Every structure is written in structure tokens, then in C-alpha cells.
Length: 250
Length: 309
Image (cartoon, rainbow over all chains, first blue to last red; front, side, top):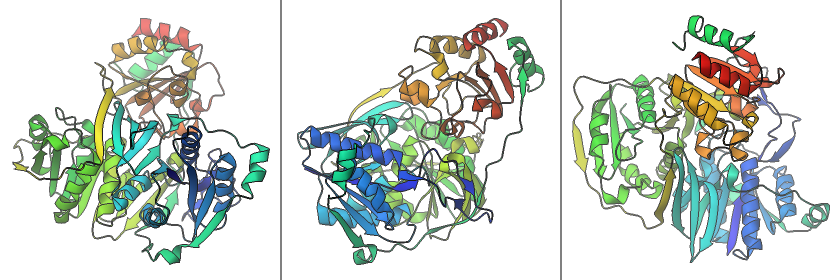
């Protein structure tokens, strides 16, 4: 079985971003970029399924400019077999990404598709669900455990009240949550090896999809800052303040 | 300009998240319907009819909808949505799982985690873990929004219950089957609706010491949450996690105990009205957002607080 993993290049999670001075976007120039952490977990899970001989090939795909090749190479250094770049200079929305990934699925015919549950830049948490709708595949979102058996995949999901386990027919879409696994680090020999693995580039225009933006960002601002508070000397003063100053307890 | 709100429920009770979503809906229009999709969910439909602002309750009560799987619900909603300009769901794991799938079926780009409705087509939403707030405009003929519950008050009750209409369909997908659920039950308030929350971090050092927080919570009628560090360390289950990828909360009082204040945790609680931080490290970033900071050993502080309350 082939596993397709979609990954996104994002500002590294250690970078604290700020709005640009014109208040129109976020200042990400000259910041470190990485594979979105949730996507990295998806890559790791796919590699583990291959190592467990439940998958035969791991293909990574990213939609974006040539810069995404850096993250595709990283994914191959971690263990993915080959990569596809769907090339576009445009900043696509999840719906358009879903359409592009659907076109890739039609060409690659994977048995399982894995994505991170959300990217840490847009925080949309949409692409996997949209892709599942467009391909009419079942979805196992926010996965914390994945098991393949009898041509089905059993996914344990992190939901608000606790955990929910679903059994999905294959092919299926899985989006990964934080506790699914801890991604490995790429070794130097594997980084060198990844440079020779195949990376196929296809222009987004060849898919002929509608990728026009539907939602336009007109302003980006910093969140309201909290006023600095005070330090209290002990628990008694804290309780006094909460009762008589903040009046939040009685 | 009609609006459809998708009810979040467990077939027995209407989740509070739905009430916050209805408040957001009422800011857009006074023509708000709610759809309850489930199995043997009469009580939920009756509760929904009493929520202020609801004009009609649509009920789809069939066994196929017992576990509210996204595959079944989205195909059903695709047809119902034809009549509506807006489709709203809470930005909980329920809504986040369902709404994007539904929106894609009628070629709509959804808008996640709305924290403010500026006008009929303009919304504010956090990006980059809440480090920036984006204003977005969409002229799509249909708009699908998930609503961040902490940003909107819960809707109250109305004196006259809205009419309840039952419908039936024959949609049943075989793509996905429910296997099991492991849902925590607790006498304490739910994190998403609690007025007071006590949250523990890695500083708690063990699962056992969370019992101390539970005891304190019971005195305050509080819910108990945790930082990602405490969840990853295995002290408490994942559904207690507060933060960018866990629950987003905004109670009247948030007490952070042994939590350093990583950006992703602050993203989940910094809209709380009053924040208290208890930490022995006086340089911990949590103190920068705290209204009241207590630099002390947390076990000493918990014990003293327990005696004072």
C-alpha cells in the first residue's frame, strides 16, 4: 500500500511573529522555516507503517513555490521514498489545496493519505476534512493512534471529552494530532541520501482547478495586550485580592 | 439572510458550545434555525427550542446518526444548507471535524475560529497561535463559520419555545464505523463553560498531585485543566489540555499552577478575565499575563489556599 503525506512549509514554531508595520500581513521575511510540526508527525507515522511492512511506499507532497523543496527533502531524509511539488507562487487556501491534493491522489492512487491536523500559521484545521469531502473518503481527524488491519484503518481520535475510535474503509484520510508519535531526527547519511531521491515537480496550472481566493485578509493586528499585574506576598493576600479587589470568588 | 446552527450534543444534552454559537449567529441575523442530528435526541431538540434567538428546530433522529460521523452528517447538511446563507458550528473538535467537510461539498472555503463578527461578510480570527488577529472578508454566496466559544457569551432562554420539525432521510455511509469512545465523566464543570479553572503544569510533578488541584477545584466549583507539558508527561488525559491545540478557554478566574507559560498555552487562556499564576520561578513568562502572581512553592501555596477557602 502506498501512503501519500501532504506537508506544509511554515514559519518555525520557535519564531514569534508580528504583524507588518502596514498592518496588512504577518512579518515572516527572513524567519526560519520548517515542516509544520503536525505534518512532521504525519510523515513519521507513515514511515513507521512502512517499517512495520504495512505500507510499501511513502510519497510526500507539498503545494507551493520552489522553497518547499527544502521541506520535501527533509521529509525524504526522515524516510519518505519520493516527493512531489505542486508548484505555485500563490498562497492557496485550504479549499484550493484540497483540490490540488485531490488531483495528486487521482494520479498516485494511494491507499492512505495523511496530513497534519492544522498548520501553525493559518491555524485553520480544514485541509484534511476538505480533501476527504472532495474525494469522498472517510476521515479520521486528530488521530492519536492508527492501526491498519483487514483492509481497514482503525483511528483513535482526540476529541473534547476524551477519545473516540473509528474504523475507516481504505483509502482514507487521516489528520494527525500531537500525541500520535515523536518524530525522529534525520541522520547525516540520510540527509545525503535524500538528495538523490526523486522529486517530481508539476505546475499547479496543469490541474486546471479553481484556486482563486475566496477569503481575503484585509488587516492583521497584534492581540490586545494584558495590563501587567502585581505580585502578592502569600496565599492570604492572594485570596484577599480575589475576594475584595477582583471580586471573582466569594 | 438566514442562518443554520449545527447543534453539538451527545443525544442527551445540548452542549454549551452550541449556546455560544447561537449568540454569534444572532449578531448576524435574527433568522436563526438550529439542526439537531442524532439518535433518540428528543431532549436535545426540546432544549434547543428554548434557546433565545432560535426560530425553528430541525431534527433528524435516526440510528445512522447516533455517533454523528462526519461522513453521514456532511452529506445530510449539504442538502439542508441549500436554504441558508450562513452555516455555523462551534469551533470544538465536533465542529472542526464536521464543518470543513460540509463546506467543501458545496465549494465553500470555510472560516475557522471566528472571535468577532465585524459585519455580514467581515470577521476576525486568530492566526499564529493567537500572536496575530486577522480581519478577513469573504463575498462567497454561502459562508461557513466555526465560532470560538470563549469569545461569545452563552445565549439565554426564550419564553416561547420554537417549533420542532422532524425529518427523515436515507443517507447512510459505510465509509466509517464507530468502534468505541472513552469519554471522561466528572461532577466538575466542563472546561469550556466553567467560571473558574485551575490548571496544572509540569511543576505538578506527578499524576497524584493533581488530586490536590481537584480538591481545591471542588472548593471553588472550578474545572481542572492542564498544560501540554503535564499531558505529555502523562499526569492527566489529553482532554484536559488547554492551549493552541487543546481547549481555548476564557473563564472569570484562571489559576495557573506550576505552568511556565509557553506561547501555545497562553494562546488557550489569555482571554480569561482574571489570571492568577503560582510558580516558584519568578521569571516564568506566565507572570507577564497574570493579574496576580504568587512566587512560591506550589505545594505550599495549594495547601495554604485550601485552608483559606
